[in-house]
Image 1 (cartoon, rainbow, N blue to C red):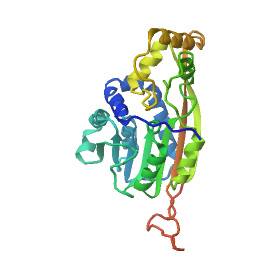
Image 2 (image 1 turned 90 degrees about the vertical axis):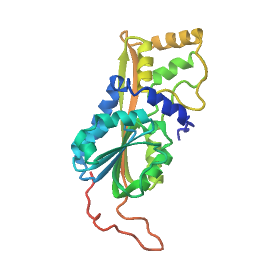
Image 3 (image 1 turned 60 degrees about the vertical axis):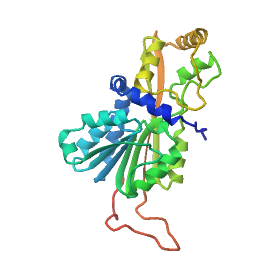
Image 4 (image 1 turned 120 degrees about the vertical axis):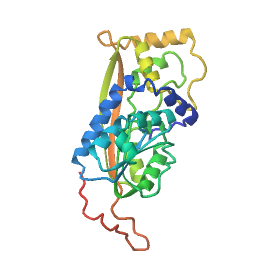
Length: 291
């Protein structure tokens, strides 16, 4: 199992707060992965009344969910207040006035949401900034019986070129560690979900130079925020070794950056586990079809 990193939540919040103004310009891949995730909802025969978007960022996913499920109340949650405010500003005026969109600054590991109050949880590329075991337990708590979690995150091959290049410079941890999809599937089961389905696909972005890669990461706010990360300034000599090692990986004169997108979904069982031989069956939840 992939070793989980201990994250500096304060630094994480600051990174994404500072990126609110630059995020959309750099988030081309993030929107593409969001679109592919949301396309998978076409085969889900579920009409949610309440949807929670964990890590809503500037609101792209939330806006798409609002268009797909016009009668649903959509809750947008982000750890950075400036991101939640940006998402609120791009939400439609009608949805704000009718209370169908609510935006909250909060931690995915301590959801400010009532137990069994949500029908669907969607999270696009936020899980890598959390302890998934805690998040899945929280999501399981807030979902109603028959509820659905749809997620994407990044897998272990993400930014492998960047990681390899830094190894040529020093032994410090410069790049975030990402979790294998099989481990995530096991975590979903351990949290009480049923029928988890996980798959992945790889994307390779190319840049004119190494600084282009670093610039995108900065604009996204996707810094390494592990407590074990390298501290202090990177000296010119070390950065030169890193850049030379990365440039040696160029393909047709372009600098590659690989991203392993992991997709997953799982259901809350319609019936609760048996207690003393008694099984609880929620009224009105029988017979819901799954994809």
